[in-house]
Each structure stands twice: as C-alpha cells, then as structure tokens.
Image (cartoon, rainbow, N blue to C red; front, top):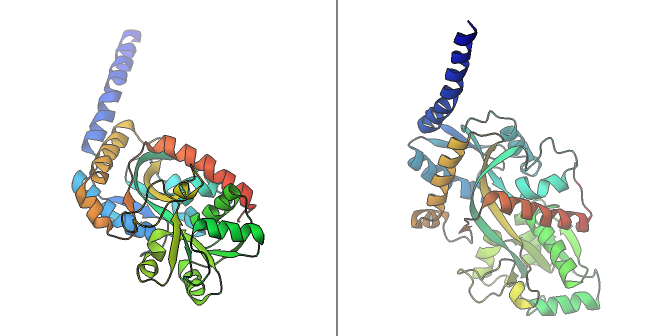
Length: 321
C-alpha cells in the first residue's frame, strides 16, 4: 500500500508540469477580455484597440476591449488585480495605473507591482510643454528665466491633479529650480480652451492632446519631455536638449495580467506582443497622433518609473482619496 501511494505521488508529480504545459499550449481556448481603465475614445482606448486586434490575430482568438473607467484608472486596474490568473483577463495598464497611483492614492486597494504580472510594454507618448503664441516665451529657457524672476506668478494647466502632465510639470519645476502655480482641470479639453483664451500661460499635457492646435499654429510647443524629438514635430526640441540633461517624463502603456500568471501563458503573450509592437502594421494603426511603439523590459521599466514618479508625487505634495 505504501509502495502504491509512493508511485501515485511520483506519477502525480511528473504529470503536473505536463498538465501545465498543455494548458499553456491550448491557451487561449476562448475569448480574452482586455480591461481599459478609462472611458472609450481616450488615449488609453486608442492604444488598446489596435493592440487587442493584432493580439487576437496572433493568438487566433478574439481579444475584446472592456472599458471600466474611474478613480484615475484604479477601478479597472483593481478588477484585473483580483481576477483569476488564467490569461483571460488582461489590463491595458498606464503610467498612471502601474507607476503613479501607488503613491498618489494612499488607500489603493491593490499593489500596482505585486498584484500584477508584467507582460509587455506597447506604446509611449511625450508630454508637451505648450504656450499661447502671444505668451512671450520664445523658448523653454525664456520661460524658466521669467519664472525665476517672478516665482509662482506663472500658472500652468494640466488635465488634472496627479496626471502625467501635472507631475511632469512638478518634476520640471524641481529640475529647473523654479516655482509655477499648478491649475488642475477636469480633462485636457477645458485646459486647452483656457490656454487658447489666454486664461493660463502654459500647459503640460501628452502630445496627442495638443498636437492639432500646435499643428494649426494656435499653440506653440516649447519642448517635449521625451529623450528624442518627435517625427511629427521635428523642429521642437526636447527638455534634455534644451539645457536640462537627463530629464525624461513620458506617458506609457503596457499589458499586465493578474499576479501568478502561469509562465507558459506569460511567455506566449509576451512573445506575441513584442512581435506586434515591432511591426509596421502596429505603428500604422496607432496613427499620427504622437503615440509611438515602446518595447522595453517591462518589469524593470515599471520599477524604475514607479520610483521616479513617487518622487514627483512627493515633491508635488499631493494625495487623492
């Protein structure tokens, strides 16, 4: 009896990795849901839909987008964090949901790093520093000079407290040694309206939001926060190239799954997504809105970004419920 039980144990132990391999090989056997933690039509939705389409083609199964907005993306992210780690619920994560919100929301019901399996980065967009053409700032250096001459007299707008634009502005003020007053808006559109009307002088916002007005000459872009210039605005310098080396602050998007996703499924998803992100088809589907494909080792990138943005949140002195 003892010998039989021992054989059974050995057989079971040998069978377990085989069963795990079979599950990974058969995945996905049904449609996969990709949670977008923001409303339809926004920047994250714009990235998620071509990603889901091409990932579905690669896996031979439908990847359908499920928009669950609210609380800076935390509601949708929390849904994924608590989902079964079987590969059938994915998150189109953002710099907000998976790097900023842990510092921004003291009572966040999940851990943005520990409660997710990082799959692959997919896209990024620089933050643009834009002004009204009549604001009197010809360059970023002239804006800094005026801000130093009159501390806190210049107001800069963003899409809201804790957004990449707000925190990029706070990071730049700290780097440049200046003080500007932050004016948070409920989204990019009302902030752009006030910038166009002259109610505020400066705005920090992801490039895709302000690009149409910059292209039309209604706004002037002083600099971009990415390491490299944008091919859409080749004449606009970067912050790092304007006298503040090493400064970088970008919005980004990446695919995550719940923690403890089986290694075989993780590998299959990562391999498919990395191939998609490198493809011309994906670049074309993202469109000419300032969003670029991004392919970096996600786990390390997320940790470094979390550290960087945590400092920005602390320096900005903000916390949201």
